[in-house]
Image 1 (cartoon, rainbow, N blue to C red):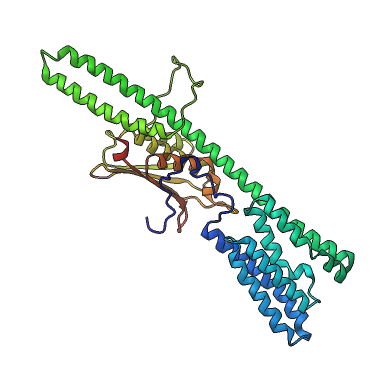
Image 2: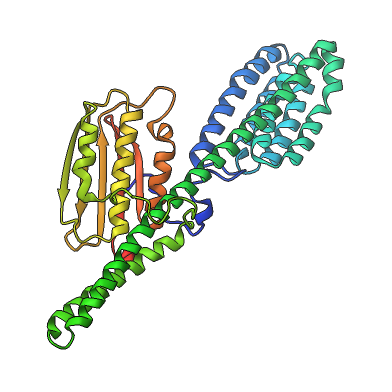
Length: 396
């Protein structure tokens, strides 16, 4: 799926899809941070330097060069925020020394940006040391601008550090919510697999009794029963492997005599589509290949992915009135491909992927446990697509 954001199986199940780890930024986030901070520094500090240095012809080129040094140092904000902070602080103090007309708060703008990032992505104790270091030039601000200048400088520094702490807390909360959603989805998967395995073993016991009854008189019928037992055992083993990857289901939920709903499967896909059609949405379902012989775990995962994708369309797709569901089993039965596409618009101020919340987390977790891949995102021409590929071999 060239160019797509595909999530694959991970060797760290406890941390899967738990968000970015503290101190880590994706390449896209790092680039956005650099361009945004560089634009801010060049626009604000660069303009101040040009205005203040208009009467200092010899100092102006050096000051402009120092501003460019700060802009370049911001390139390392994501990888080395401490070094970026030190470089920007030194260059900013040099700019202020050359052009005192530029306020110390403005000269150290890039350093304040670096402090904000460092506060967000590095341990709190380290950011506190950085905050203390940034407060050291405060007497210079008092000397140059009086009480108001010093107060503005301290306020700007503390605000930068506080903004970073707020961002850090927000990221931690998002990781915690995502981890909780993953745990809940694993428990749900484990309960479903538990039911499937219990059913398979019950059928195997019945087949074994039947084989024993006809073993002498009808050996061919006994062989058929034994072959069915072998097929069921292989299927149960694959399902147990999936169960071992997930968490143990809550033993307190449901008693032995509790009535359970029928196990969801692709055979009930039309029923699922009808419930969505009842809301006024047009749902087109297209199947390719036979889904009858799929392992139960793959069948369950494919159904749940379609279910979650349709739910997200109803909840988050602005203006969507049509959705297409395509389930394809390739000719050799190696994998199941599930694609759900709607014609909605991305909400302003966010993405449909972000709005889908726990639904996408559940889809990713099911796909990861089966060793498959998942892509979910807006389409260039409008609409939103969820595309999953579920291998059959590893689950059977």
